[in-house]
Each structure stands twice: as C-alpha cells, then as structure tokens.
Figure 1 (cartoon, one colour):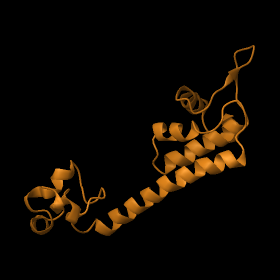
Figure 2 (cartoon, one colour; figure 1 turned 60 degrees about the vertical axis):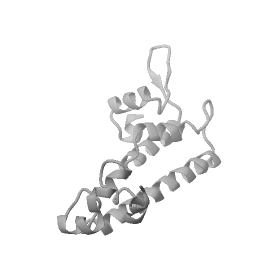
Figure 3 (spheres, rainbow, N blue to C red; figure 1 turned 90 degrees about the vertical axis):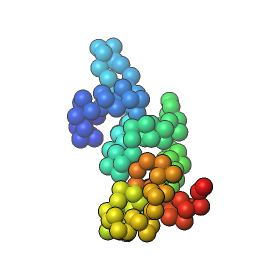
Figure 4 (cartoon, rainbow, N blue to C red; figure 1 turned 120 degrees about the vertical axis):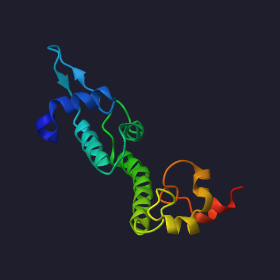
Length: 145
C-alpha cells in the first residue's frame, strides 16, 4: 500500500487509526488492505491539500459502502458534496483576494477606513475574527441591533 500510494507506512497507520481505511489482519498479523483503499487514500491526500480536516474527510468517506468496492456511482455521489464544499472555499478565497488590500472588518488594515466601514467595531457583533473576510457584509452587520 505504501509503495502504491506514495505514503509512508506510519501515515497509512495514522489514517487507519482515524478510520479512513480499514485493514484486515493476516494470520501472521500483517495488514491487508482492499484495492479500494488506494482510492480512499488518494482522496484523503487531495482533500488535505485543499484544506479539508480529517473529520471532514472522514464524514465524506463514511458515505462510501463498507464491505464492497465503491462503484463509480458511489464516488460520483461523494464527488458532488466535495465539489460543493470546494466551490464554497473557492468563493471564500476569491473574496479574500479581492478584499486583502482594503477593509476586511475587522482584522483592520486601515484605521482610517475602519472608521467609515466599521464604526464602533460593528463587525464584532457577528463574532470574533475578520468578519467581512469570513463572509459577513458591512450591510448585514449594520442591520443588527
């Protein structure tokens, strides 16, 4: 499995302890993986590269069937949810790129602009962090009492 996936044995063991793959044991105690685990581990690597947590990856992989190799239809179902989450990340990153040189409310880059776009730190009402960068708009913050 390590040779085929390019992962270290310790990484595969870690993913096994996280419930992302399940090995059976031979009579001699060696781990035996299904061929479908190659695809699962490939999915794990891709998902981690785009910022998904182990828990988020596990939730998606839990949708795949146990006891049989997932079909193309199974992987397509998983892919749909993954695409939706990726689209959300892409939108968020696009907004971040567009707002980085302006007010991101409020991890403030400009106290002068902050007085105009975030008076009395209104963005804080929505919670901690750079609220506008996280998806809140100045209009939605202003509407809150």
